Image (cartoon, rainbow, N blue to C red; front, top):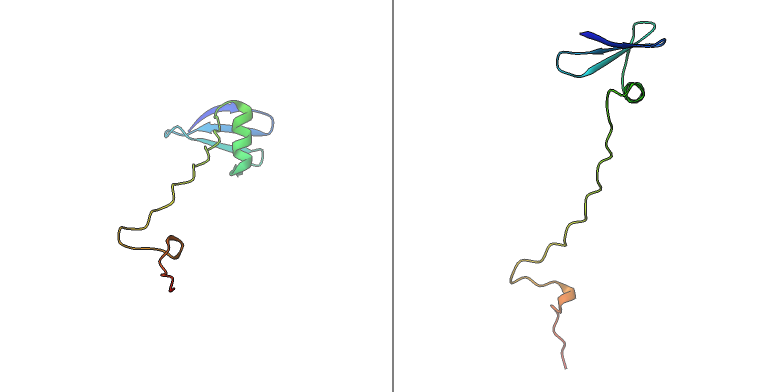
Length: 77
C-alpha cells in the first residue's frame, strides 16, 4: 500500500487494487460511513446518488383469461 495523504487524525493509503484504506491515530482501520466522509473531504472519491427506478407497466392477463373486473360474471334476466 502506498500512503496517499496524512492529516492530523488520519492516514489514507491506496491499495494496489485502487481502493483506499483509512487509519486513525491509534492505527485502527476506519470503515463505513466514516471512511466515506473522510475520503470525500480529501477529494479522493465522488459519491453519486442512485436514480429512482420508474414504476413498471402493469402486467396484462394472458389471452383467454378474464378477471372479475372485466365482466367475467353473466347477468341473469
